[in-house]
Image (cartoon, rainbow, N blue to C red):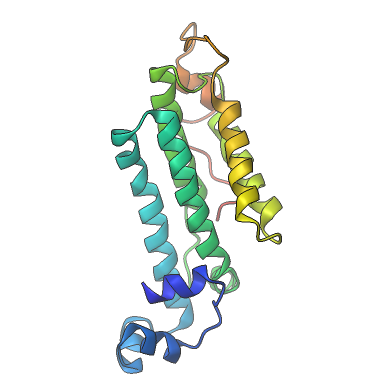
Length: 200
């Protein structure tokens, strides 16, 4: 999608007329579908969020859980790059109420929990990690690298995150008094991942 590519390149301020020309459509056609820049941003953001969350299941089908999760983190990094290019418009829309505040954190946390569940069953990922801690660490990776523009550093930090999630050599997945899901969510954690600011 032309708009997604523009946002991913950091060219979020490109005029809608220019986007229409790049897409090979008339400006009237663009405005019929997206009457405002906020409407276009909302559509791109929703589409990207759907795509990144939906990609997890296919990765788990094709790869061991740890490999699948690491590849998904790269896909999530692409999503974050696109999001940064439209962040001003998103924040403006959220504040004005013209763009609905998304349930991004809850959906991303659920995906991470799916990876952790599969990894614990396969003995490839630790079963004593709280899913909210992993989400918070992921938030930290992208907040700390926002202004640096160094994708190689993002990759290294994601590798460090994955290293911390893998069990020690020879360690078997445990399942003593609490299930892996209960270990990850903590004693007071509701079944549905909690939402909070940071991945909106």
